[in-house]
Image (cartoon, rainbow, N blue to C red; front, side, top):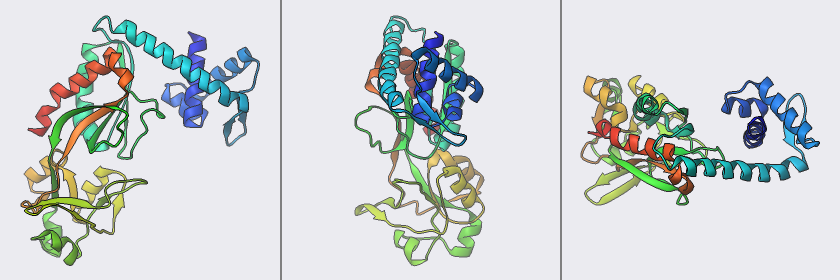
Length: 300
């Protein structure tokens, strides 16, 4: 198995661009990851990377070898998944990702129960509000809030997700409470936006009597972390557009107040994406089913 593990290190270093990142992804120290690469190069009798003190770049033969090594590992994973499909006793590592809010408040709380039920599994969870590339990042499941954009993946919808505009009482007392969608522009409200490269949320879509209406809202602050936006709203810095489950406790306590309740944001969905080939892997199938069964209470 040491040769296979060395192949896994090599592939992840190629994909992530550094020994430190590749090793961390596989829970190895940089020293151990580097040793695995050297052992692989010695076995092959070629140099796979050009190394300097600041960077690591693949050689021509390294690039060629990556394609074959990646195919070998994919074939091995598929073979193990097919064998495992003959039982409902999954084993192995699940690599999952989710946006920060849904990951912290919905998916993460449900992980320990799954792990207790299936002790031969390991969960590696990465949280980010940025878009991810499931295949390039070597992920098994990507949870999302919103509209999925990757039609090549298998989609599983878990729940409809209401959204809400809200702000702190302090902000509303200083800036006024908007009565119509136009007030977001006319009263120059500070709308707190989730933004990152290729971010879709450069506008808010509200539900009106005339149908959905897109508003190109503006604000002085934006961030690529949804929880930062919530913190700013709690501090009286502006209006946020958030999934209701994400701010439910703040609304109950009165720290945030819903605005424009008669023209709320367009609802979205909570679901996940995963490669079609993962359907035969019981740990993927069972984990998705686990989230589907147990996440409904968060949206009640």
